[in-house]
Image (cartoon, rainbow, N blue to C red; front, side, top):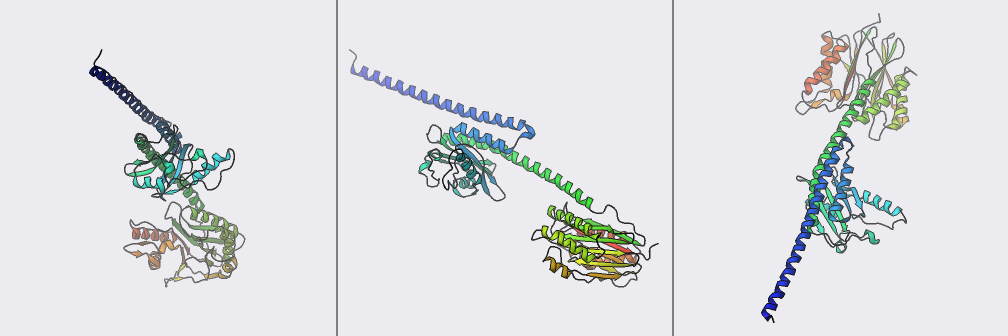
Length: 482
């Protein structure tokens, strides 16, 4: 008979063997789990490489969708989403989601429709959610850059409740998507399929996936931004070419008269405009205008203004009537904060008379051919797009001037006289008059005037940026036509 000691030792050995076998099984399970996690990460890395190998067909949305799918697979989650940060307004929005994922920011306000409309309504509400950085759970993770594990979410008051059982959040895991010190978004998964809570091992694997994905997302965002910028630059170049084509290709060659002009936009597309309209053999219409603002919107308004002016100019030689018609055509299409200043002139070579109408534009300067002091043309007028049509019509008037031999008319936009530098201040009307007068006293003509004014402005500005479009038109009367 074995002794009691022997029996005890046999029992103890059996217990130790059992414990050892349980430990081996537990270690094998942990090993298999780690292998599975490793396989998921490696599979994700290879999959990302495949995405980029697709070249121009790659989109950020496709990449984010794949990230969410691998997040669900690696954690056994039933639903997940990526909230991407918009740097401009510091707001996160759901950019991609998969599985059953309810709107966890605002919950469900009101009942869901019956049938298939439920899914559509849930997705709509999810897409409309916005999260400010620092607000709620998602905003907290975005602000701190640290993961957040909530194993028992159904007991957390920060998570909205849902009447529908399949929408209820039982467990939640949130990790930041970080590129260096910059948070790009937040990756969220909810409700493991086996109904067990998320644990730290899931947090580690999800963070690893998020970190790997963040590198790809950063470069994808940069690539898309660069592509959009290139497309925008291409569109701007095309628009600038179209706008340039709207300006006169050639300066009219009139007997007994010299004409010259220049226009330099502050940006690729400007709001300044000048034009020549040949009315008949002895009458020439001349316009110069300035649309408030710069860029594409000002350029579009300028194109509309040109079309309206050319349509009205051939119906009458009265400048005031032309501007009234332009105002009627254009004013209703202007935004509330936009207006157009315009000067329209009609030159009659037979009578050596020039007639002005001024819609709130800068006053043209007359440089007499006899060398006496230059003077500004005084006339009433208000800008196009300001006030009612009746108010505009009442404010516009014609102003007639009899030209003498050598008289020069200078029309310009305020970008010329208001050109400025921080050190020197404004270039000013006096500088414009002095430059024009000096050129004429030296025997220069209209082309010399525009050349010298433009050159003087460039010298004045030096390396300072140009804040406004600069346009100038010069008309020099040489005497009776030959």
